[in-house]
Length: 345
Image (cartoon, rainbow, N blue to C red; front, side, top):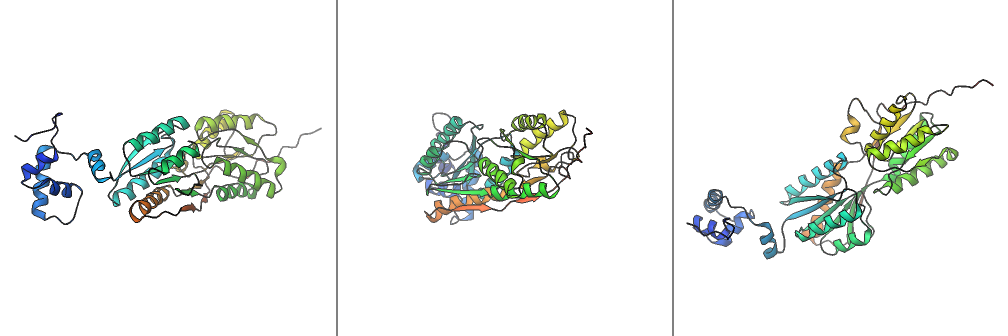
């Protein structure tokens, strides 16, 4: 019988003995090396299957100084935006022979810090941090240990790369779209401390003033969540005069705002127009049909992996900051403002 480790799991030695080859050859086969004869490869794979052997990635990583695993930190698993980014990451990583290990911090900076530390302890070769809230100092520290790419948040330190959407341009398109429809009282439910929220808020205020609508600027606190959009929209709808158009910081917030509008007995877009940001799968649902700003999320994930591999495999050291152009997707939630009812004296 083949000897096993103390926990009863077969080892690389067991596979080598059963296949009648050396341990180094087993290692080559498990890494997918090409210069192994078909007969020997088949013998090793057959022995591994018979013993239910799985390579120990951690042990291999310690020996080779690489695990071929990329760590991904998602800010919020409830947001479909991140599912698309991760799809792009997994697709691009698999093509390059890497696996993906995912963690989350639930939009809490301290938890995100712990999640990053966990990924580093598991010896990932690189990090992809998507729209994280953790403070910049901790991100820079992580980037000094492994190549790190930010998605949805611009990189400042030279050790970091980033892939972002042009939040400013996307927001300008939103405000101009509403103004072209005839809206003046365009309000904004912001994204709080979320990645990109500050740029969207600033672009909203700037564009309103540029269109000579400065006196109608109205920003209420929100977040990139349904609750944040719901609470912010309620504040706007209780104001007098209420806005005729609401720009929510992302699609999830827009869904929350839509609920608030309906709770008030109002219709979209007849009474209030509504715009989101991200163009997630939720926005395209027929019964929602949300006007929103499209971010190429899958491509953003793919580009993040490509940036990591340039540092890992090609030795690039200069910073790369990719900024992708957004596009406005007009659907059923925007239309002309309601006619103002004249009040008789």
